[in-house]
Length: 293
Ligand SMILES: Cc1cc2nc3c(=O)[nH]c(=O)nc-3n(C[C@H](O)[C@H](O)[C@H](O)COP(=O)(O)OP(=O)(O)OC[C@H]3O[C@@H](n4cnc5c(N)ncnc54)[C@H](O)[C@@H]3O)c2cc1C
Image (tube, rainbow, N blue to C red):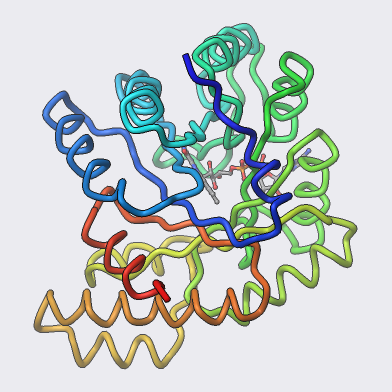
């Protein structure tokens, strides 16, 4: 069994890290499709890949299955995600042991969303209420875990203020997290402001911008209409409006916008970029090709 390298060691190399996020498929045929996606993007030297954790049910087991496939069959450094949703402390401890025993050394450490329809997150009996508690539990159990945590350049929707959100982000770092990956955003000025606020609040770890190219109008409408969703710059909105009647043109506009964002982020010294590619190989390849020098 090969042991994954902690991502903190990669950040220490002082070069921008590039990573992509997969989500676990619903069924076995989806796993096969994901295998093909992984094969298609393998030629790019991703520093790591991450695999999201579902809200419940079988997709959770698939996070473990797909993470193992990506690590053992493709040689990626893999960061499985884990949330507090629906798990007791004892279950989280057991899951963490399994992740560690399988050779993973990186975990994206999250609270998770309230169930559909609920506005507040209620921890399960003997469960955890915040990602900072999960970070503390994971580090106490396996100090060699390298933990990533989520940051929100436009504020987490449940947070009453930016200041409190930053305080709680700092608690996650104080609990042992090594880096922050942000929620997606379309306007880099929002990210730069967020980084400045984090630094002023004493958060010194790498803050990795999360970028999702617009791949369809439906997707962008969903993202921007969510409570606390990402704001859409007027220029991007106008471009998408012109492209609206042709799905392929929408994708071209989305990829072009994401490329411009990433080039600007790297020029401003971002520690890398994390791509939300929605399991689409052509999207990852288009971005990697557009960034190649
Ligand atoms: C990079 C990234 C990856 C993600 N991956 C997944 C995934 O795989 N699966 C999934 O289900 N969801 C995922 N999400 C979504 C995430 O689960 C939700 O945004 C969730 O609502 C918050 O999770 P968190 O870890 O940021 O929570 P927390 O950091 O716990 O924060 C949640 C809210 O509680 C507040 N808070 C934090 N600590 C305290 C405290 N001590 N007292 C009072 N309030 C507090 C915060 O200000 C915030 O408003 C991801 C999000 C990001 C940005």
